[in-house]
Image (cartoon, rainbow, N blue to C red; front, top):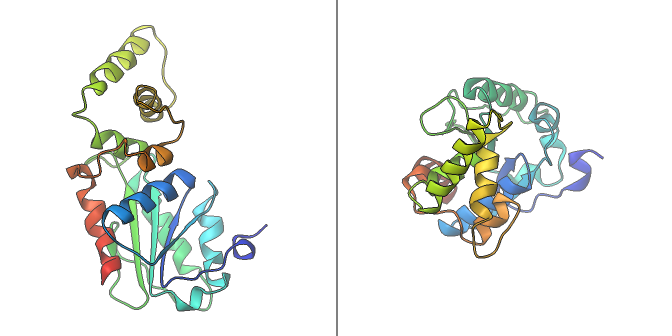
Length: 208
């Protein structure tokens, strides 16, 4: 089923994310920032390249004044940004102009912004890395890091260290939850962390 067959847009502010964890995390952060009237659509783990060009076909898209796409950098932030930028340019009938740089907006209407999640100042990363940055001073992280080091010393290579660390951290919470988005709803990530400052500033454009 096409994305445009499943969704009706009812708000003027639209955020497109990769999956349910992203949707839940961003929703919690918007609430923390007291930002309302935002529609969040997750593409359920599918490729932005395949789904973004369809956005213009979604019922109600014509009322959108601010469009934001948030993506993991994965192995290369610039590659992720350019992939999304090209996808936006392929949206039919609206002549949307993507920003020239990541984590910024264009100066046109509708406003279009692209935010690429990285690990700190690196050129790679994902939402799990960002979550870990928010709780890096939490005492539990000493145990998490020790566990990770122990696994590494056994010669076992973790396929995704950030995901593994998140799951280890969450297993120590009063209520163990399997997903980082639900963990955000439970308040397990520190939303007042400076690690989120850039993303908060970016999202504050939704207040304009």
